[in-house]
Length: 71
Length: 523
Image (tube, rainbow over all chains, first blue to last red):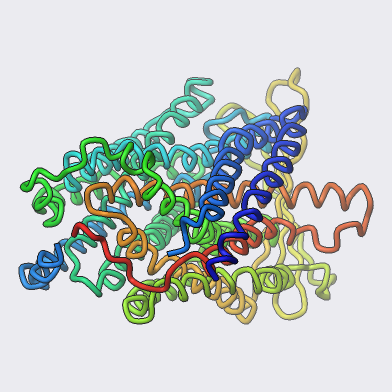
């Protein structure tokens, strides 16, 4: 189980990167939109959700990979 | 430190414990009430405070304001969490209560956009941000305070009373809105009656402040203070040290993010869905949710107490898994209950009613209500409201068309059951989580450390659920309009967000969380 937890760290890092790529692409399209509601939504996702999801998952994955959650 | 744990249950009587729980819960309930009346009245607030010429923009602006209220919550957690770990729990959550009550009361006093122009939405936004900050500080304080009084092995049970307050706060907000609306009538309520629930807050907060002033500081915090063991920099200690930061991340991705989306889907998105996607009439939709909330509320205590015996992890993760597996069939059934395209209409029974009313400014409002009757007892109204300006130079405005579906008794109770099931999931993930969080962190930095993952999970991941889900539905509907049939059921697309977040959280929680009651080494 400890090994599984450790190696899944890579999955969380990749998930963080993918979620960041996906959300940044989507939010940039929305920010460029003519509609006010799309722009607001794009900025909220880009400035709030993306840093937490990307930064958090990558750091969580790194800790998992380092074996910080083994015990 | 274990010695202090052993002494604590003996030193604190049940009477004291229940006064602590009552005082904390009442204040927290009022804070949630204050927070939710804004969301529950979003449609009316958009017409009052945002430009009327574009109702969609107005509504979404309010939703953005709503989101802003959630987005600032983690900042409130940091500011007040730090304060709570430095000066004490009691005074910190007194401050948050005053801020919340004051800003709610002030929203009720702001003149509309028609009177003071852009100052109106600006002031509302500012006050909404203060509400978010206050809520960010309140919950962690209340949960920590109760947990630090509760005996070891019973924290799940005692903190679960705090957990009922969020749902009860929503229930009370819906109840006050419905009562005010019913007693004043729809027109007066839309005109000025919506202010009553906001203004009422000041009375509730005053009562709660008096109760809280009589409370003593938490015993564990007082002990640390006496010993001179308080943290000098709770923020650096909480998030600057790997040993604690890794637990903050685990709490977020293994518990609170999933809890947040399950919580907001079951309570807020469900209400939004039956009002906007199912077009269920205002009073009936609120009644459905209110009954479901009230019926499920005792389960917070049941699952909180159960978590003391079988562990927090299994119950919380089961709630998330059930949400992931059953949301789509549940929402599909909810939609079908109100879907008139699947029902046989008695066209002969259709009625059309026209009314003409003159406003104070001389404008004429014509309302045409077409009532359709369907097999099984469902009634649907198409309400078309058009305004003829008294000023002939004004361009004619587009008629406003709304739908209002009233479910027959059988479908009504089935809808209550479907939402009740979702609220049961909420009670599973939310009932044990306060105890789970307080046990994850030591007393000296507990307020700061537990508040942040809670408010990021609940406030940001959860609070953005209605917003993101609505956007996903809009995108799917647009795609379906462009290529008919490309998305089978666009109204269900919004569920992907909570399902995905809860799914990832379930896997992380399953693998990385321990199914035991964490022991805080310095208690």
